[in-house]
Amino acid sequence: MKTANLALRPAILLSLVAGLTVTAGVLAPPSILAQEGPAQTVGSGSNIPLSADAPDQYVVKTGDTLWDISKVFLREPWYWPEIWYVNPQIANPHLIYPGDVLKLVYVDGQPRLTVAQRGGENVEGGRGGKRLSPEVRRQPLSQAVTAIPYDIVASFMGRPTLLTKEQVKSAPYVVAMRDSHMIGAIGNEVYARGIGEAAAETRYSVVHIEEELRDPDNNKLLGYSGIYVGSGPVATEGDPAKLLMTDSAREVLQGDKLFPESVDVNVDFVPHAPADEIDASIIAVRSHTVMGQYQVVALNKGSNDGLEPGHILAAYQRGAVVRDTFAEGGLAARRTSRSSNFGKQVQLPDERAGVIMVFKAFDNLSYALVMETTHEIRQGDRAKNP
Image (cartoon, rainbow, N blue to C red; front, side, top):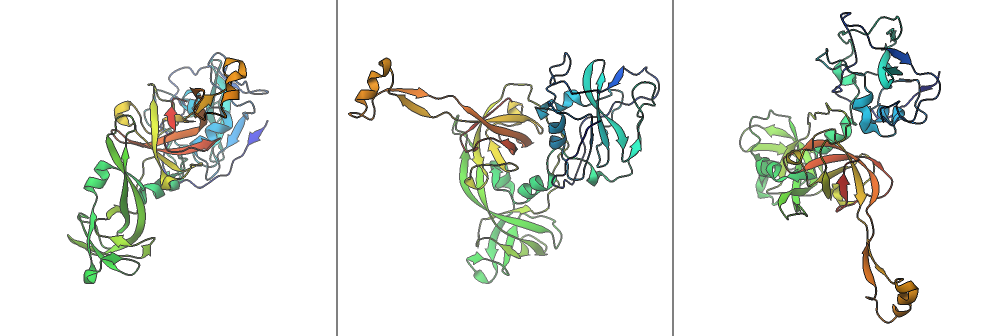
């Protein structure tokens, strides 16, 4: 029996929104058969795209994410909800922890993943075995597998460089620097309004608001890009509160916005494809660079358009516009030396460049994490159903 192992970045928090199939001995179990021989590339009669080398079982490792585990068994990880073995009788979802052994089985002829061992303890299943039943986990929630790397998303939210207009409007701001300084840096004290009842030593990131983010479809203002300025703890509570700058990437200016440095990010979701048709534009990339894996992009669509955390979208590079100088049997190419504008313009097709996962959806704007890339992802590229 082959076993796959995967060791990746640490993840910190939270559960899967899917439960394992369990019974209390009331209903007769469905027919369960262990996977034998090579895995089928498509689940029998189910169109579930199993990986050609999907293992019989997999041992969950510290640092695994749900995306990583999905890719072990599936060519297209957003099919995870269809392969994860769910019992509708159990309302509370079960968590996956390091040490759990996931097993590929067939339930009524369909490929499913279930837990064969939990933290090293055997869970008998299949023909004639004892079925898995609900139990209290001994491991803390912080050890549970997350859908995406928690630390990366939390770092972005704690030092946001893509902001909705609502975030900018409501965020606390720097009103002045001590001793009438016009700018601040490491060691300087700054005064901020709007922090409210934040306790002393609570750390805040300072962000300078930069360019507007506008919807390319209708020119509507969606938000702003920002530049991380620095951070520091609250030294004196009140309104205004006083902060001491202990980290600085550039000068602090009056009007700069403040955001809590420590952010509790909800990653309680699973990868899945949108039910509705999505055609979004990538309106911003972090730091205005081309994007690679685990970097953040902003989309001009949000919850009002049906997007939600866990939605998987394919990123497409916009096809270039070229001139066809080889029409008319190639005779047109002979005349191009006399006119650079000769030849009909032709729109090349969009090309798939990667896969992104939405992790935060506002009304008209979303944040997504780049999960895979085959080509550069840039501002202006499209994001569509995978």
